[in-house]
Length: 210
Length: 335
Image 1 (cartoon, chains in turn red, orange):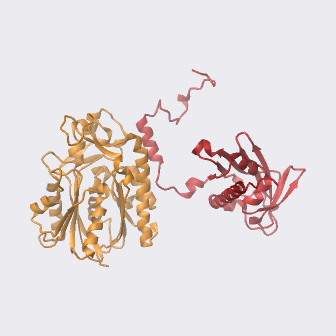
Image 2 (cartoon, one colour; image 1 turned 180 degrees about the vertical axis):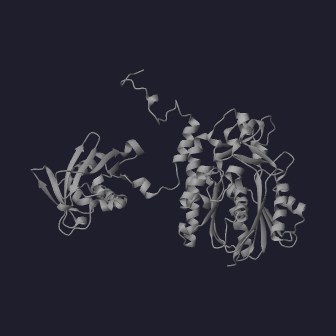
Image 3 (cartoon, rainbow over the protein chains, first blue to last red; image 1 turned 30 degrees about the vertical axis):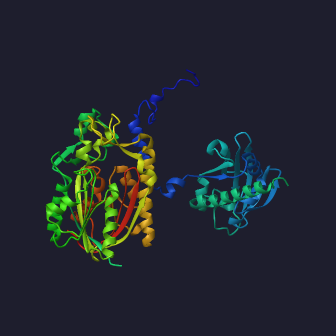
C-alpha cells in the first residue's frame, strides 16, 4: 500500500458513489438512468462550452501555431487589426462582431501539456475574464492515429450575462459578447473548423515559418 | 395510392398474474434494478397455447368490429415469440380454430418486439397491390411463462421483466385511421448479439436437463442500450422526414416496452410529456411484439387515442437487429 495523502474518511462524505457503497447492479442502473437518447442544447452547453476536433497535423506544430497570438487573426471569425500594447504586455484587436469594439488578449501557453489559454476581454485590458482553454493532444495516444486532437472549453463567466462596465463600450454599440452564449457552440465550432483547415493546409504545404 | 387504416384492436392476457415476489423468492435478491418499473406480469400456464390466446383475442376483435371472420378477413399475418410447435407459426391453427377463410396466411418470424410494424407494412403492401382488401395482424408473446418462469431461470434478474399476452388488430382499405408512413430497417450486424443458451452449453435442439434462457452478452449490454437509444429515435425521425412533419406534430407515442429508461428516452426524443406515451410496463412488463397492438387497444379503450391526433408507433427488436417506425393519422373514433 502506498500512502499518498493524509487520512480522510471518505465514507463520511455524502453522495460518493464507490464500489464499497453502491453495488454493480445499482451502478449499472444509475448509468442507464443518466444516459438519454437526446439532450436539450441548454443541458449540454448551458454553463460550459466544450468542443473538440481531430486535425491532421503533428501536435507540436499545432501547438506552436496556436501559441502565437497572431494566429487569432487567421482562424477566428472576427478578431482583426492586432497591435501589441507593451505597457500591458498584451495584444489589442478589433472584434468586428462588436463593430469597432476593442478586444484585449494575452496568450498563456505551456509546451509540456500543450495547453494554450487565451485570456481576453472586450473594451478594457485590465480584467481578462473571457478565457478560452485549449489543449493539443497527440492523436497517436488517444485515437491510435496520426495528427492531433484539439479541445476547447469555455466557462460561462457571469460577465457574459451582464456587462460589468457598459460605459466602456464604443458609442452606439448594442451587442454584448455574452448575448452570443447560446450560439457559442455553433460559433466556436465554425472557428475550430477554420483552425483545422488552416493547420491541415499549412501542414500539407509545409508553410510554417515567416 | 389506397389509404390503409387501423380499424380496431383487441387483446387477451393469460389468467396467471405474477408479481415481483415470485422472482424475489427464487433469487433471494430483495431489490434489483430489474424490478423497477414492473410490478406485475402475466404468464402463460403450461396448458395454454399461442393459438389459443390468439383465438380469444381475435374473437374479441370480431365482436368489437362486428366482423364476419369467414368473409371479412382476406389475410392473417402473425408473429409468435416461441411457437406452440417448432417449425411452424400459429397462423394455420388460428384459422382452423376460428373457421376463418383467408386468401393468405403469413407467419412472420422476424421483427421481434417491433414485428407488428413489419406486419403492418406487409398488410398495406398487399392491400395496395390489390391482392387483399383487409387483414388481421396478431402478435403472440409466449416467452414469459414458457422460458422465464422455469425454475432455473426465475432466479436470474432479467426473468422478471417479460410478460405474456396477445394483441390483434384489424386493418383494411379505409380513410378511418390511415398509415402515413412506415419505416423498417434491418441491422444484420447485430443479429448474433442475442442468443438462446443453457447452463450446460448445449444447442437448443439437443436434449438435456437445464432450462434455456435468452442471453444478452453482458459485454454487449452497454452497446445494446446505446443501439436502443439511437435506433428508435432514428427510425422515428426518418418517418417524420419522409412525411415532412416536425416532431411537434406527434401527439401520441406507442413503442415496445423493454424497460422504463428506453420509454423515457424515446418519449424525450419526440419532446412528448409522459402521459402522451401509452404503455403498460407496470402491469404487463415487457410484452415483446405484443406491446404495440395491446397498447393500441389500451389507447383506444381509455380514450387516449382520439380523432385529430397523430400517433407514432416505433420500436426495435432483440439486440438491435430490426427497427421500425410508423405514423398514423387518427381520423375516427374507435371503441
